[in-house]
Amino acid sequence: MIRFDHVVKRFGDHVVLDELSFRVGRGEFVSLIGPSGSGKTTILRLLMTLERVDGGTIHVGGQCLSHRLKDGGLVPADERHLRAARKRIGMVFQHFNLFPNMNVRQNIVEAPLRVLGLSKEEADARAAQLLQLVGLADKMDAHPARLSGGQQQRVAIARALAMRPQVLLLDEVTSALDPELVAEVLAVLKEIAASTDITILCVTHEMEFARHVSDRVLMFDHGRILEDAPPEKLFTAPTQERTRTFLKAVL
Ligand code: ADP
Image (cartoon, rainbow, N blue to C red):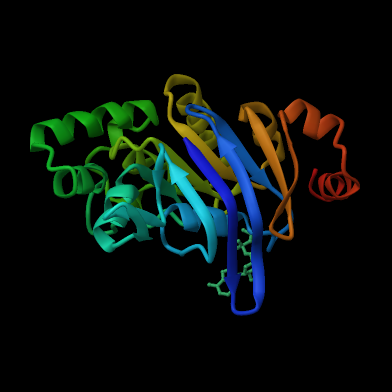
C-alpha cells in the first residue's frame, strides 16, 4: 500500500532522508519510533504531499505520488494529481485542528460533502456510524470547545476516517493530551486497527502502545531505518546498540 524507493529529502544542505526504502502492506499497522529529528514526521508530510521528494519515488496503492505519466514518460505531478492522491490518505495531527465554529457533526461531514460530493443523508449517516466507533455518539451536536482534549482527538480521528482513506497517518496524536486522556484515544485506535483493513502509519512516543498494536515497528535514526521488526522482537531483543539506548531512555 505504501512504497518508498530510495527517497531523498533535503532541507538546504541538510539531508533528512537518505535513500530511504521501505514498504507497508495493506491493512498493516506500522509504528515509526526513534529520536527527535530522525525524519519520522517528514515521512508523513511527504505522504500527505505537504513536501516534495528530492530523489526517489513514493507510491501509495500502486500510484506514484511525485510523478505522473504523460505521453509515455514521467513528469512531475501537477496539483490535480496531488489532490487525487491526497484523497486516499487521512492524517491526524498532534493538535486536533477541529473547526471551532462547527459542531462535531459538521466537522465530520464537511469534507465528505464538499470533496466527495456525498448527499447530506449519506454524510450524516457516516458521521453517526463513526461517532459510534469512537465512542462519542452522544456528542454529535457539541462544539469542540465543550469537549475534553481526548474527545476532540477522537472526533479528529472520526473526521479523518469519514473520507474513507486507504491510509491513515498518525503524528504523535496523544502527545498534546493530559496523561489521563491518552488511554481513551489509544483504545479507539486499537479498535480501528482491529476492525478495519485500513493501513496505518503511526509516529509515536507511546512505546507500550506501539508494542501492543503494531504489526511492525521501524526504528529511525538520522533519516535511516536502523531496525524493522515485529514489536516483540524489537522491544525485547533489538539488534542495534542505538535502539537499546533509545529504548532505555524512553521506556
Ligand atoms: P522527527 O519527526 O523524527 O522528530 P522531523 O521529520 O520532524 O523529525 O525532522 C527531521 C529533520 O528535518 C530535523 O532536523 C528538522 O529540523 C528538519 N526539518 C524538518 N522540517 C523542516 C523544514 N521545513 N525546514 C528545515 N528543516 C526541517
